[in-house]
Each structure stands twice: as structure tokens, then as C-alpha cells.
Amino acid sequence: DIQMTQSPSTLSASVGDRVTITCRASQSISAWLAWYQQKPGKAPDLLIYKASTLQSGVPSRFSGSGSGTEFTLTISSLQPDDFATYYCQQYQSFPLTFGGGTTVEIK
Amino acid sequence: EVQLVESGGGLVQPGGSLRLSCAASGFTFTKYEMNWVRQSPDKGLEWVSFIGGSRGKSRGVINYADSVRGRFTISTDDAHNSLYLQMNGLRAEDTAVYFCVRSMRDVVVVPGSTYFYYYMDVWGKGTTVTVSS
Image (cartoon, rainbow over all chains, first blue to last red; front, side):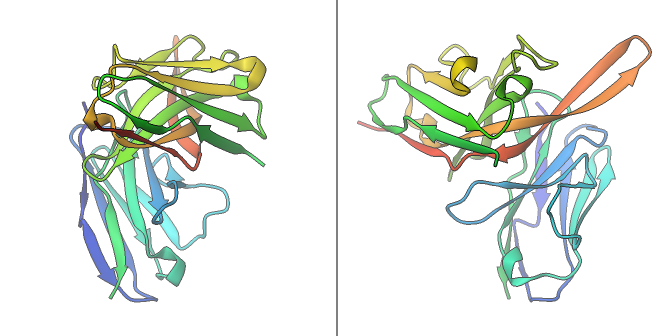
């Protein structure tokens, strides 16, 4: 199975900050990576797929990059609505696997 | 509007069974692949099972996580635009919120072969399964 490791697990930031979350795969997954945002009590929402393609309707302050085994999710200017938990997920092969999540909290 | 609505969760004793349902609307159900994903505080997000749409590129394809293979069965009812998860031999570690999730595909074509890669684009709100005596 492909293991996905996110860092940091928690991140404290202020509105307007630039935020970067890292996701590493245990083996190459090319660009077959998705990012999700989840708020408490809600289902995850797709933000980015194929490592860098923004899902329709997602604000342009979100961006993704990387390929192979190392990926990043960047929020260019953190907004109040962005305080949430973010997950990466590989879809190179079954079983599909998720990272452990990064919680972005208010500093 | 694309919508997925899960039902069937509840409290069940270890060794018992439950059948989860997911009603899909707002899209052509038969053309899409579908998944069950669960989430618990202990294990985080965990993919459970995948099924190819009957008119999709991966029709007939079914996959399971090792943790549920042999105990859970995924199926669809195209006439009712519904996805199901039959869960038998339930264990305490199956306690989680279960999400019904639609997949979209990325396609790679190389000489002689076509490869499909499925990400998950629409999630239901989830239904809670608790396995406890």
C-alpha cells in the first residue's frame, strides 16, 4: 500500500498569511494526488486533483504543486473560511490512501 | 444539483450486520464509479470500497480495502440510482462515519493501452455506524 504522510499535523496562522502544507508518498504516484478540505461535522470537499488542477468553484488562492513523491498545497492569503483540516489522497492505485490531515487553526 | 444521501447507519453488536444505502441524484448514476469511505477519530479517513458504473469505463470492477474484504459487499441498483454496502461480521474497529462518494476519472492513453485514475469529487454527508455491545 502507498503511505501518505502530511506535515505539519497542526498549523497556527493568521488571516492574510501564506500557508503551505506538505504531503509525501511512500512511492511515486506521478501526479495522481487530490487535496480535500474538511470542516467539523461536514464531509470533505475536493479542492485540487491531479496535483495542481483546481476543482471548479474553488477560490484561486488555493494552489497545488508537485509530482512523484512530494506535493504541496498552498493558500496564498488565508481567509477566515479556510480554517479547517486538509487531507491529501493518492489515486495512483488501490487501495486509495489518505494522509493523516493538517489542521489549520487561528493563531 | 448533484446529491448523495446515505442512510442505514446505527448501533449494532459485534458480529452483527448492517446495510448502508446511498441515494444519488442530479447526475447519470450509471456512468460514474462510486466509493464508500469511512472516517473515525482513530484511523482518520479510510477508503473502503469502489465499484465501476454499469455504463462506465470500469464496469464490473470492484475493489475492497483489506480490512473489509470478505465481510463487506458493495453493489448498485441502477433502477433506483442507489449504492449499497452490506456489512457483515462487524467489529468495533468498523465504528465510523461512512461516506458515499462519487468518482471522476483522469485518463492516460499510451500506444496499446488506456489507464484510468479515479479521484473523488462529490461526497454525501455520511451515516454513523457504531459497533458496540
